[in-house]
Image 1 (tube, helix red, strand yellow):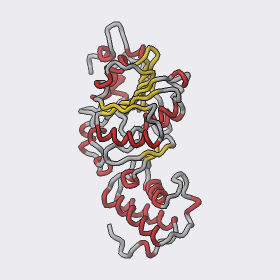
Image 2 (tube, one colour; image 1 turned 180 degrees about the vertical axis):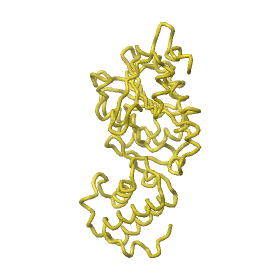
Image 3 (cartoon, one colour; image 1 turned 45 degrees about the vertical axis):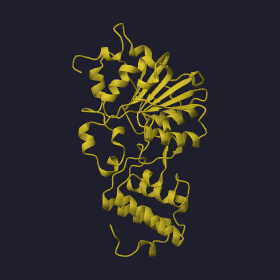
Length: 313
């Protein structure tokens, strides 16, 4: 989308560029949801990142006049957001979750799990004593962000971070190294629990793919830019979630718990597993999208959780 005149010749302040970017993003009908939810927030993030300013507040800089090189840099990245329709995090190679910054690229989904917010609070609904958490597993770790946040939240814990994608684990390794946590976080290539033998954990975190085939097929460009394997959850989106529920208890210590993000599948899960006492952990941005289950509640006299499914499953 071309301007009749070069914007860098007329836009002098951060305020000018912010207004111009919001107008252009709205005109282009961009889609958000990768750390921002509006054209204003997306534009502010890109501007602040490009100008090497703290990303949490734009107001102090609104009337700052920009140098010619800074204007050209803003023009380039804002035009790229429109022309490529890639999430902003792929353009900046940076994403924020739980108050922490992580490197990301197209090998991993842009981190935005609600579990990140819950970890920042220490998961009080599930964990009564942080020091008692000694082993944590982060399934489908992607960029490694939840594994790192778990290591920060539970300083006595060793963390395993697993993913089926070798490429994703390379990104996770970069982030683990950046936080200096290589001695506490182990990276494992595994299809869910398959490569973990019979290791047991006090806490299992899971943010698996949970998008239905129909929704994946209808993705806008921004979501289609992410690895399809990170989204595809089968016909109703819950194929992999069901595998997690079926296998998790074996890998939990007697007092252990599972915390899993499952998207909009709450109604389906409560129908298919009527005997499971799901605890739903709401956040500032979600209701009924993160579940918690203690190990004891996932077992019955008949066996693991998959045997507890109703006949309507």
